[in-house]
Structure formats: C-alpha cells, structure tokens
Amino acid sequence: MTSEKIPPEQYLLEMAVQNLEYCRHYENQRMGVASSAIPLVAILLAVIAIDQALTRLDLIPSLFIVIIGLHGILMSLRYEERFDFHYSRFRILRDELDEKLEVSVQSLNQIADRAHFAEFPRVSKLKLRYLWSGLHTTVVVIGVTLFMVSIMADK
Image (cartoon, rainbow, N blue to C red; front, top):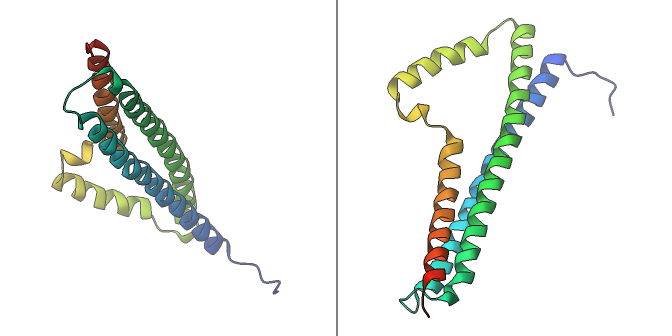
C-alpha cells in the first residue's frame, strides 16, 4: 500500500462519477419495477377476461391490479427522489471540479442544452416523473374501473 495521496481533482471526479452511477442505478430500478409490473397486470387482465364477463370473482384480480399500480407509483417516486439526491451531489462536485480546473463544464452544458431544447422544444419539456407515474396511474385507473364494475356485477 502506498502512502501517495490522490490529487483532489481526481477524488472529486471519482465521487462525481460514482454519483452518476447511482443515478443510472435508480433509473434502471425504476424501469425494472415497470418491466415487472406490466406483465403481472397483463396476466391479471387475462385472468379477468378468461370467462369473457366481469363478475364478483374478478374483484380480487382487480384489487391486485390496483395494488400493483400503487406500488409502481410509490417506487417510481422513491427512485426519482434517490436519483435527484445523487444528481444534486454530482452537480456540486462538478461545480467544485470546474473551479479547481478553471473550466466551466456547466457553461458548456448550457450551450449544448440550448441547442438540444431548440431541436426538441415540446418533448424536452415533458417531465420524466409524469411519464413514469402516468404509466402506473393508468394501471391504477384500469384496476379501479374493473373493481367498480365487478362490484356492480350481478353474478
């Protein structure tokens, strides 16, 4: 083991990269929740549709669909919070690196951002949180609708 100290710039860079890796991890986790929820919901919808009629027996799979959707919303929000936490750490480390290296990656990013936003003015305004939560909210709406119709079923 050497007693050499690593330069502060290298340490800051490693910490910045580590936080970006956490960001990527949480986005992958969020995608994993959706990727597992949607097939489960599809299976439950197939169970409901197998007899081609909504009955009171369909209350249970409908309730599971609602639970899966609510779980998806909560997990998506939690992973977003973790992403934002690590991304805010990354930004602080980047700014500190900019100061030490006497460059401004932030200003270079702003130039690139303006060009990107000019090319994609509408899509760039969409918040990813609404898209992820919207997917799971749709699952909840489907589940609640099926649940309500099942309650009103005569059989």
